[in-house]
Length: 210
Image 1 (cartoon, rainbow, N blue to C red):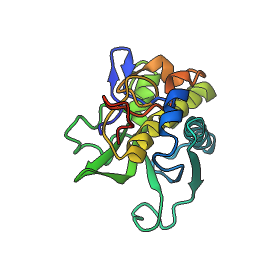
Image 2 (cartoon, rainbow, N blue to C red):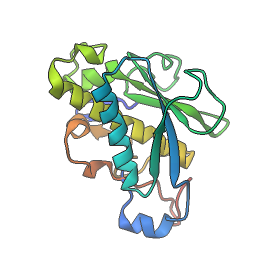
Image 3 (cartoon, helix red, strand yellow):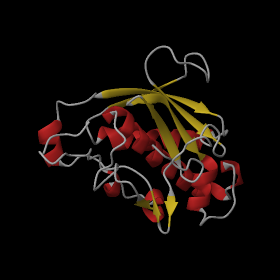
């Protein structure tokens, strides 16, 4: 899965499940996910908290509990449960992505049809989207509290999208909501969460696609 890409007026991101989806798919997939933050980009404590809150709020509306815990043994931890959210200054860890890593906001990789347990989120790419493509490689470069809040909000929504790929163990996208392939950059920073309702892909038979 590539980073959320900044397109003309659009950026790739996810949807929250509709009542119809909830009725059809309520018993499918995990109802709880544990996340560990690895803050390589040195987000401020306020921005880090905002990112975490955004992710938890989006998935709580979908009936999935999100628990953030300290990483048990640092950045290389692979044992135990949970997903590692690696917040990086630029495209660190993403440049080898054959689908265009470095041009979007967040990424989770798949091997042999299985999702990895590391999600990478790029502060630099997000700052450029939020700032109208101006060159800013670090959150600290954003002037003022408002820009930091917008960057953290957009990062949280990008991470929430990648968590959707992890939970579904699928690279598929949905036609609407959080898991659609692209979102407007203005939606990424707006207070309105309706464009980010979680609605996983549904196949032609009307079943949940995993």
